[in-house]
Length: 154
Image (cartoon, rainbow, N blue to C red; front, side, top):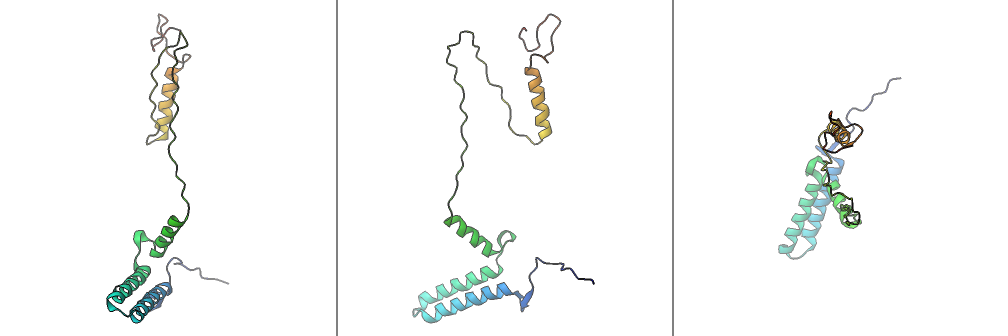
């Protein structure tokens, strides 16, 4: 037996005149709330803006899609943002060791600037290998008189 596989499962079926079932429910709910507000609030100056707000909210639920996502999803995300607790993370500052001067033979050295990120991990790897090789006393090139190219004697 052969079965047909559905092709477009993300697209909802149009049921009511070019509207999906959800769109029809949203428009019907917004229209019903607008009618109820207009009919039961006795002052028309107050009832017309409230009814208009309900109608616009129903239309936004049905048709408005910010960033190609439904407006309902945006409302749900906003609700979760305001009701759930938040976790704030900050950058912790590194503790820089302070030279106390108690050691008599201690030299002051300036820290070597090493960039943290670049566009390519391969470039980072080759750069760090070059720097570590030049800092390693075993792999340094020596001049014929015994001096190291870094300026120190071994």
